Structure formats: C-alpha cells, structure tokens
Image (cartoon, rainbow, N blue to C red; front, side):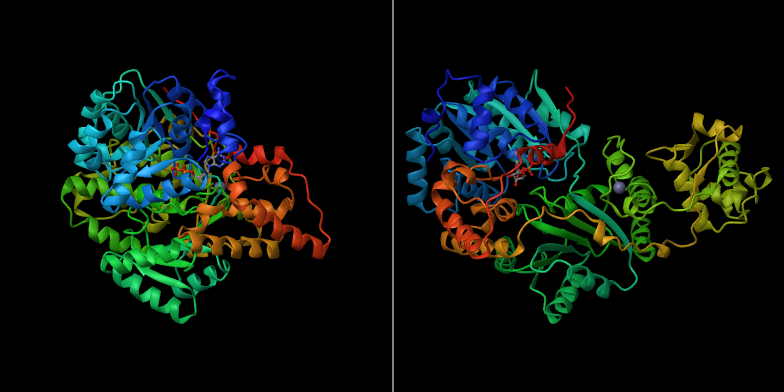
Length: 639
Ligand code: ADP
Ligand code: ZN
C-alpha cells in the first residue's frame, strides 16, 4: 500500500501540487486531461461537484486523487459490481487501499474489509447504493470519518435518464449522516434535464458543474453502405489481427448467425445477448476482457459494466436505436485514448424496417421517434465532417472544419453542385404553405402529388405546386436535409414542421449561393482510406508482442484482466523508448511507484535482452509529444 502521508507532507506545496504528484507517482501519468484538474481542485475545497464527461474521459481520477489526499474515507457508490471490482483491482495494483463491500464476498472477506475500514486503513470503499443504505453498513460507517462521497453513474438517480434506479433517490438522506463529506456526482449522460435532476435530487446547493467536450478525438468514424454485409465484416476485422472489438447487431438471432459465420471463418469470437444463460454471458464477457477471445458479437445488452480500455473497433452491423445509443456504443472503443475504428453498415432497407416499427406507435411517440431518426439520418447523409452533426446533437458546436478522423474528412474534396434554384423552390414552398408542414409534405407539393393531405389544404392551387418534378422524392429528401444542415430552415423538434431562417431570405434574394451534393444513391459512397487513418505511435511490434505475452502471463497468474497490470499504451511506450533502468521506466505512461516495484525488473529484463540482441539503445522520451496527446480531450467548462 502507498503510504500517502509519507510521500506527501500536508504542508508541502499546495493541494493541487500534491494532486499532480500523486498523478505521477501512483498512477504514472504526466498531466491531467480534460477537466480533471479543475474538478479535483473543487473537490479538495469541499464544494459539491457534478462532472459530465464522456466515456473514457477520465472521471475516476476526479475522486480517486482527492481520496488519497483526504485524511478520511471516500465512499464510491456505483451500480455495477463488475465495474467496482475492476476499479478496486486496478487501484490495488497501483498500491492504493481500496475495498468492496457486497454480497459476492465470503463472510470472512466481508469481515476483514469491515475491520480495515474501521481501523482507517482504507482510502476508497466501493459499494452499490442498496448496500450503503443498509442499516448495518450505515451503523458501521457512523464511527468512520468520511470526507467524500462519490456517486458514479449518477444519471441513475433521474427518471429521465436511461437507467433509472430508485434506490439512488435515497442517497440524499445519506448526506445528513456524513456532514463533513463533499459530494461528487459523475455521469456520461449530458442532457440538461438529467443534469438538473441529479443536482436537485442530491440537494447540491452551490455546486460546480463541469461539462467536458463530448468529442472523442481518437475514434475514427466511418459509415459504409451495407451491400454484402458478411464479406464487409470479414474484410474489416481481418485488418485487426489479435485486437479486441465488438460487433453490435439488432436481434439475438442475428447475433447467433453472425457468430456462427465468424467462428467458421476461424475468428476468435463469442456471442452475447439476453437469451444466453447468465453463466455463458459472464464467461464470454470474461474471456473478452481477459484477451482470451478477440471479438464479441452482441446485442445492445453488452457493454454496461465493461471497462476494457483496449477495444480497437466497434462495428454496427445494424442501425443503432438512435444517436444517443450510437454514441454510447462507439464510446466503448478506445477508452485508452489510442486510435479506434467505428464502422456502421448502413442501408435504407434498415431505415424502412425502423420506419415501419415507428409507425405502429402512438402519435406522440411517433413524432419523437421520427425526430430521432431524422437526426440520425443527418449524421449518415452528411458530406461534411461527421463530428458536426454528432456533436451538434449533444448541443455542442464543432468549429473545426475537418477532424481527419472520419470517412468524409478523408475522402478528399468532392464536387459541389450549385443548388440555389432547388433551394429557392423548396424554401418558397415552405413559405407558401405557411411554415407549418414537414419535409414530406413540402416535397409532395413540389412534386405535384395528389396526396389527400395536399388536396385537403388546397396546396394544389399554390404557385409552387408541381415545380419540382425534376427530382425524385428521395433526391428531394437528400436536398432538404442539406438545407436543414445549412440552417436555411429549422425544424420544430416535436412536430417536424419547417420554418425559414434569415439565411433563407438571403437565398431568395440571390445574395447567397447554395452549394451541395446531388447524389443519386448513397451506394456511391465507398471509402477505402484506411491507410490515412492515424495509427498508434511508432513502436517495435516484436517487442510489443513479447511484453504483451508477459503481461498476459502475469495477469492470468494474478487472476485479473491484462490491462490491470499495464495498459496497451504503457507497453507501446516501452517498445518505443526501450527503457532499461528503473529511473527511465518512471517516464513511461502508466508506471507509478508501486507498479514499478512490482513489475519493473521483469519488464526491464525483457527489454534489455531484446535490445542486447539487436543492439538497440534506449531512447529518451520527449515529454512534449506526450503533453500534446494528453490535451486530447480539452474540454469546456460551464457553471
Ligand atoms: P471514464 O470513467 O470517464 O470512462 P476512466 O476514468 O476509466 O474514464 O479513464 C479512461 C482512461 O483514461 C483510463 O484508461 C485511464 O487510465 C486514462 N486516464 C485517466 N486520466 C488520465 C491522465 N491524466 N493521463 C493519462 N491517462 C489518463
Ligand atoms: Zn471529420
């Protein structure tokens, strides 16, 4: 265990200096990412804090570091046992005394953990909300000084979130018992409604609210039209030999079918869906987490409670449910900050199925579902950087024109067509119909349809009736989405009706030219720009494999997932800089004092042997390159 009070004298430097020192010596990182530093400072000042950061954004350190600075205990409430276990294992590996209290422990283990807590030997206690609410647990904790209460997956407190858990609601009463404790609530769910709910449910008064940017720079986003899905999938995963990935399907049957095909092709793969027994699911998940199996084919049931940082690809074999699910699912890739590839296989036939589904719902649900679907279509059909519609959806402006990490940005300049005339036709039709109708109706009028709705409103008498017959309905849809995207019109969130913007008037008056794309079919789009995708830092692949084998060995021995020992990034840096002394090992990402003591000589031994044979010299690590990558998720802050 790290004796923090020996390493950091309370009167030495400011608290934030201490935090930085812990970051390096315990966790082995060179600098804070995203909003970590601000959040930690706020917590250390004992201000209640709400943290919204995307998956992989680095939320855990926001309370783990203060926990090591506070004298008393930090309680972490989390809904998922597997996640808690994972965190405790990782902390223990870094020499931090963290324990769990739950029903999976034997009575002896439970008693031992309680003793450690009572003696003040524990820095972090992880438990589920229902465990914390037990009177025996509250009683036991009443004699323990508690400095911080961290509420992970805090959206569970809100009925507006996607995972409401009623017992979270009672956490507010707990705060009366721990009057000295500061509260920190963390989630990756960004909607303002949920945020508000969390704060009011927990009685946060003057709380700081920290919202990080939602852009995950290291994820490569690609959408491919689904022509020959099995071949497409196989070709795709062949590009990732030995690397972990998840393939999402819509139904259990599809999971089973695809699993069988991939298995027969010789891939290391397992299925996961709610139709499997609990034992099978657990086993398949564990095999995946421990790098014994490369690929999981799954329904959306898979992913909650997975902390595996080195997932290198996520494929959507079918359309995700909506933008939020998509974001959450791709979010499971590249948690370690290294590049990861997200591919979606898209077909209009799938859209048809979904529309069919939606049309069975009641009026209100139908409208909401169509708005969600349209938002997703905007993301699929855009020719601009994919990050623009994606982040816009989450209320974030993406101001960089090219991310260079999506198919569109890499596909080079495409020819633009002057769309001013069709735009004028479309916009004037919106105007003539009183800005009260949605896309479908406007297009019907433009194409001179005799649909009942057109006749009922007398829209066949308008001057814009039938002036757009030169384009098919599908082409008009594509055009209309571009107009929407260019903000010539805005769409009512609930009713889908279109309204003109000031920009539309500039188009009417020929003050503005509208440029865009006039494609016949989406199928034209096929992007093979793989080579341009950013790859991992230059490193010695053979050495990496040697180190990886060793890591797996050690992990199996300790019965933990390999990433608990060292992350991929740590091994990549080792095989890029060839550290051969205990001192230079400390410069490597993810190597703290305790891990160095534990594993340093083993890994240095392997590196030395490799370098001796090949006459390779140690390379100094340029910390500047490091800091650049560390700022990968520079975020915004709102109060
Ligand atoms: P979240 O809980 O927000 O999904 P985690 O706390 O699991 O994210 O962190 C995601 C990844 O980022 C982890 O692999 C973690 O080791 C890494 N990480 C967190 N903070 C830092 C940092 N300051 N420097 C480098 N890596 C970091
Ligand atoms: Zn882009």
